[in-house]
Amino acid sequence: MKIAVAYSGGLDTSVIIPWLKERYGCQVIAVVADVGQGAHELEGIEAKAKKTGASACYVKDLRSQFLEEFVWPMVISGAVYEGKYLLGTSIARPIIARAQVEVALKTGCDALAHGCTGKGNDQVRFESTYAALAPHLEIIAPWRMWDLKSREQLLGYLKARNIPCAASAEKIYSRDANIWHISHEGGELEDPWNAPPEDVWMRTVSPLQAPDRPEEVMVSFEKGMPVAVDGKRLGAVALLEKLNAIGGKHGVGRVDIVENRLVGMKSRGCYETPGGTIIMAALRGLEELVLDRTTLHFREKLAHDFSDIIYEGQWFTPLREAMWASFASIARVMTGDVVVRLHKGSAIVTKRRSPNSLYSESFATFGVDEVYDQSHAGGFIRLYSLPARIRALKASQAIDGSSQKSKSKSQSKPAASKKPAKKSTKKSSPSASKPKAS
Image 1 (cartoon, one colour):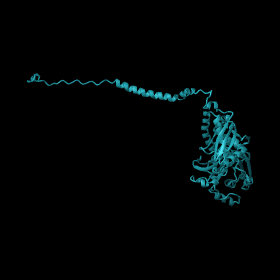
Image 2: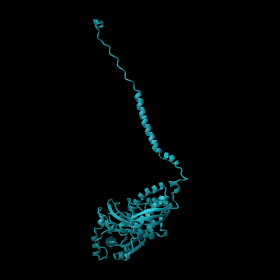
Image 3: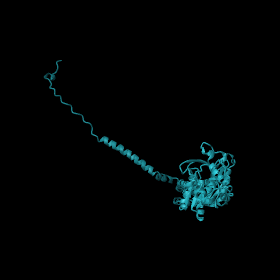
Image 4: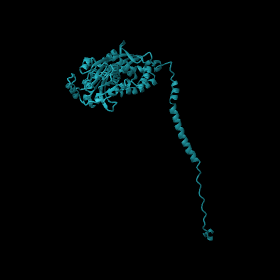
């Protein structure tokens, strides 16, 4: 048996390799996805994987593909999970799992394994990708199978087998990094009443310590894809690295959120997405110029559902493909330049221009113009408000009709007749008719 494991070099996957070999008596192929997590995490990783028992280790540089095929489409869609999270971990999982599947098929593996816990979202994201791309391969999730429950037990497992590991028993935070973002969970963050300590943050300075002088950066787009910074054309990786450095210097892109996990529980995380925050702000500023009202609102409605698709690991689905076709069509006019001002943690659009701009100063001006007859607005408003007018008229007619009906009913009612006086049956005496003597 041969198993391909998604390998990061961390404590969990360092344990998984020998555990798989002992349990299944198999060969283990380690697959490392370079999505921009940093050279410090990748240095010597191939040798490390082999020391823990892997028969082979494949390191795949996926940074450009990650941005061009996954992140930029997400940016164009405007997808943001629960109003704050720019989906940094979520969007990386489908390309990592895809690379793992490709290696597994190439090397003749019988199964796929991952180091995701049974409490998190990532198990869904990895296994949904496996199901879509290699449904015939067995899936092995050690965290749902073994009896190792703590960091101390994992370290003890490696120590008992004389397997080297640089991890220590004390790990303050659980982190996940790629070129788009870095996430921080655990430690003091598990209590939502604790403010994030400053030692949590790694890619951004505190906004309080950021430069007092604002800095402006211009981002250029072609069909929604970022292609240049300050007029200099750059590849996807170089472009984002540059914006990460600029944004980080100004404390841009920090998020502290208590989110709803797909598996049902809430979790608290701190995310840093400095360059991504700049790009998202810039593209939203550009679409203000080039998208008409109904198209923009349609894009915004679709973005909510698209964020769920990414968060829930449904990238390789017909629905995602259909939705992306809509976004790609909308993005055809999203070409232009946007200036974003960075200051003390904020990223605010100050300028935007595009050859496809729908904004016309001659129409929008408050001064004298020759292209807009304000008297025409009256007819538009009358038609626009016609449903309300008809409804009000109908209601008025109903009231008048009811009043008229009530009045008519009142007039047609016969008047009450007086009852005839009863004749007296008592006979009068003869003397009664005679006049009295005076």
